[in-house]
Image 1 (tube, rainbow, N blue to C red):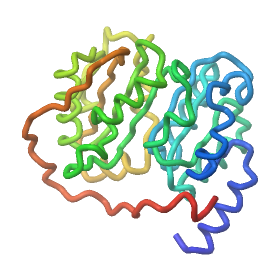
Image 2: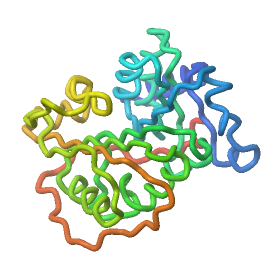
Image 3: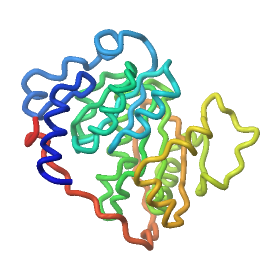
Image 4: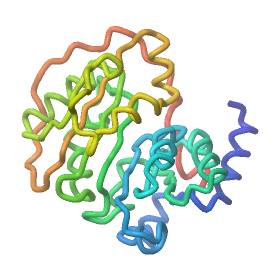
Length: 262
């Protein structure tokens, strides 16, 4: 993407009512004004709040918002040029149950108050095979999620990485998390007889991120896991050796500084 195109998208997002951008300095000085007030002051309803972390182009944020008008969806990412795609689509379709926040996921607790979030989606994130604390399902992040989620909140993981999926299995096991669903091949697993009240298998298979489409084209199995998060967990990192993924990931742009475009 050209620099000119990126700048045009950043300029658009400055005017988008569904895009919120706060620098670290702003958070330190004044805090985030919607923290604890998302229902009353942004969505103007009491519907459950669902986050998509590392949302990229916002395929799940927008796709689920179309499907579930009785839920509110917020995509979170640091890369505004990608987020522009979902934010633009939501505006064109007048989806009032959609918002996007441009920030680092490490700062998530500064944007949401305890018990404010009901579900989290993690879709095709970098598996971070060499950096445990960067994995979005590591105990460092799970602890942060537990501080903002309602008791019994749900965490969805959809990925191509055997490494990340296995790591998350082990993390769930040693911390005694309830695994409501788990498959290493989403498009081949049997789903008859499973509860659609919690798991929307049709949405899982029809809403696809740009990365997912690339992995499917390469013949990679798509994995899915659904966890139920409980409060007051003394988080323990799994001590296990996991084979590294035996294929090279697509190049991912380096993280850009939020302050450059805010």
